[in-house]
Every structure is written in structure tokens, then in C-alpha cells.
Image (cartoon, rainbow, N blue to C red; front, side, top):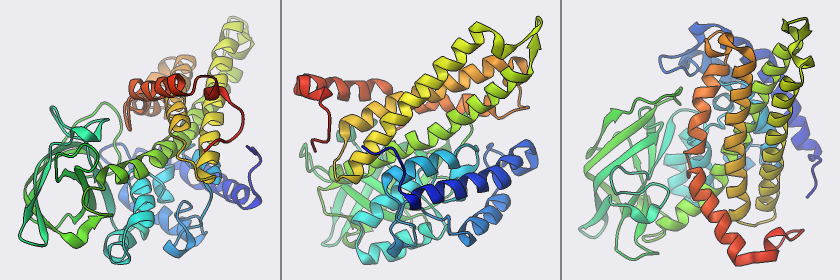
Length: 402
């Protein structure tokens, strides 16, 4: 694995860093730039998105034929990290979840007609999208095979959807949806991915679920399906291919979370280090105290480990591997590194860190969900343990083995 970025990726990284530093981070200090749910206000976002497009920093993750920049996953690691040094960053460049993962899977799997009506407006930033899989009660969570939402055949060319979904990110603002529903009881071929538009009848948003942390635009919603009809031409891949769709989408999407979390964690350490170098107590700056050095070193080591695991998984994706084990390793490490760095920064800032005078408390609240979304820590540890049992010594082999 080569840790040096290719020249094009490095150029984009530098340009994004300059954009974030000069135009986005300064906005965080003014509450007028926030919406009611603690994200960037829509009018401010629209202005910054126009600027990002004008500078050629739009949709780095997508191939040129879809209006993107075609960066490899390794380049995305470095660029996404720079974007999320600001809490407002990724959405400015159209690289925030869930649109990020939705666009990538649609660019890869959708038919030309589906891409034209579903994908094109999302790429252009004209509307948001959502991925509707998670369900309440005994339904699907980390295991999509537990999906209860049902798709029943209607006539020769349509499906009627009934069921419930919840914690669907962005659903409150989304116009385009990918929906997972059960079309048979087959363990491997029982799920199907459907596409629909928010204007279609037969579904509703039951509620926007209140959460502890700041929200993405559109929140996290509970949805009810009570007769939504979807034609055959809006099936993604084929009937029974829903599990494949989730696997193709969720692996890379999990890794893009890790990329972004690296940026938030770095921002926390930047703030913590500045505080430790300038705050004096008992005749010394904080950074001169061994206990503070241990806190900073521990957080930095944890973060750099997560960054290396993220880069390795990205490199494997670029080689054509699914990198399931490596993505799970990175997911656990990155989520915990973010939480750890935010905690250290808040501790060193003291009461100021617990206030809203800095972004640290925002990041701290946001960070706790990282260990839950796209598979809880325990699920990914189980994946890693199963690979260890299967591969034995091969688990630690050097090099790329597919």
C-alpha cells in the first residue's frame, strides 16, 4: 500500500483544505449560519455549494460521466478528512451521508433511465435522497435479512408496499428514496430494492425522531407505507437482488463515514492542542504537564491508527476487493477515535468545552452516534472475529489477497 497520494488527489486535498479553512470554518462562530437542527442554514449552504461547483470541487467521489471528479477511494480518504475539519464541510461538496452512498450505488447499479430521473437531480444538488432500510420492533437493523416491510405483486407490472421504517436519515427533506422491502421468504433472494419519489401517494412521514446530537438536513424519520405502488421499471438491479444492493452500498458508505470522522477528530485535536499550549495553570502551560501530554498522545495515536486502517481499506477497494474485514476494522477504530478525540478536547477546554462557545460540544454529541450508525461496534467486532476464526494466521498476512 502506497501512502503517498497521487498528484491529482493531493491537489484536490490542498484545494479543499484552503476552501474549508477560508470559507467554511469561520461560519461556525455565528449562530445565524445554523438552521433549527444545528446544521448549516439552507441559504448559506446554497451559496457555498455554488462556490464549490465553480471551483471544480463538486462530487469528487463520482466518475466524470456523472459530473464528478473520479477520485480513487484513497484520494477520497484525504479529501473527505479535509472537508470534515468543519462541521459544515461535507454537505458543501455534496459528499455527505446519505446522498454520498446513494449516489455511488446508483451510479454503479441503476439503469440509464433510473439515473436520469432519480440520480441526476441528486448529483446536481437539486434534491436530497434517503436509503430506507432500518425498521422498528423486530424489523431490520444491522441485519437486513430481518426486513418486515413487504412488497406485494399488483397486476403484471407493479408492487404495493406496506410496512414501517425508522431512523431514515434525511427523509424529512428527501425527494428520492431507495427502499428495501421483502418480496419472498428466500434467505438470500427475499429482498428487493425499489426506487420512488417523495411525491408518490401511499406513504407518509410519521415523525421526525428527536435525537441527542445535531441532525443532518432532513433529520432521522419514521416512515409508514400503506399502499405505495412502485412499477417494475423502478426496481434497482432485479427482483431478489436487494441484499446485493445493500452489500454494494453499505461497505463503501461505511468507509466514507470513517474518512469524514477523521476530519472531525483532527479538528478536536487542533482545538485541544491550541488550548493546551496557551492556557496556563499553576505556573505552567497545560501542554507542559505530563498528564496532558498523555491525553494528547493517546488521542493522536488512536486517531492515526484509525486513519491507517481507513486508508488500507480504501486502497483495497481501489484494487477491486470488497475489503469487508478491513472496513469493519476501520469502522470500529474510526468511531472510537472520534469519540476519544472529542472527549479529550472537551476535557482540556473545561467548562468552555461543555458550552457552545466552541464546536467541541457539537462534535462530542455527534460523535456518540458514530459507534451505532451503519452497524454498531459489536456487529463489526463480530465480523472481525469471524474472519479471525476463518483465516487464522492468514488474518495477519502481509499484502493484498483479494
